Image (cartoon, rainbow, N blue to C red):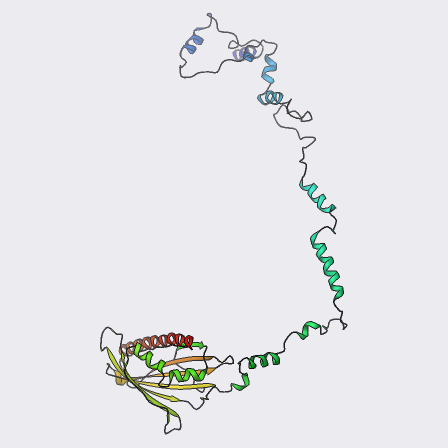
Length: 353
């Protein structure tokens, strides 16, 4: 305890030994320490502050690093800037520097602007002036009175008259309805920009379009009959051809005989409802099923035609489930490919018209 007190007195009341210049009477430990220093470690030269007397030792110990730094820059800073405390923390500034144009000054400047100088108010004044030129209409509160604008709006009857004059048809003129149940798989549902009578002639007559279409599909022995009355009083015709098959296994061609029957609900210019029954030959299991197709061509108000095509496989004999699945899969695939090819060919032909 005594040695500690002696060390403290020697440290704070007397001049330190390290503060004195080195002499030849230094102890052996200090000489050995100085001699053992590595030459690679180069210490900075001692400042004059280290060679202080005992009178200024206490003031030197109380002075902090940032105190000297603040003192060195005191001439450059504002005189009103407060000094730091002993703990090293800044006191709250009494006066703060503000820029020439702050957000508060912006708000005050915005408030001081005259409402007449803004652009929106000038537009509002113009609107008020123009509103005075509009004649006011009298009416009860909560009810709109007819204005000059209402006379410019066309009524449905006027719109219908304009459409009729431009080539449109009236909805009450299209009274025909298809009597078919539209069962089976839907193969095609599109609207074509062509009249219904023209489309019927392209698909169900000996038209150049239909003949060229079958030629591109490599169909041969095409024989298209004429429409005639059958025993039931319906228009009917027969079409036969030999089509090329795309299957890798089995026959490459098949003979098809189509019986096309026009329903009684068909009316020229409005609707054509046609049932097609196709019987295949020269293929395996050809006598066990028939293909039933239904074409519905319906006219629209815009003189266009809505096309609906349905198909169904009807089996005449009982077959194994595996064979039935094979027939349905290949038959529907061929029908879908046929309808898509027919639709693409119709689009090209309609553009030429």
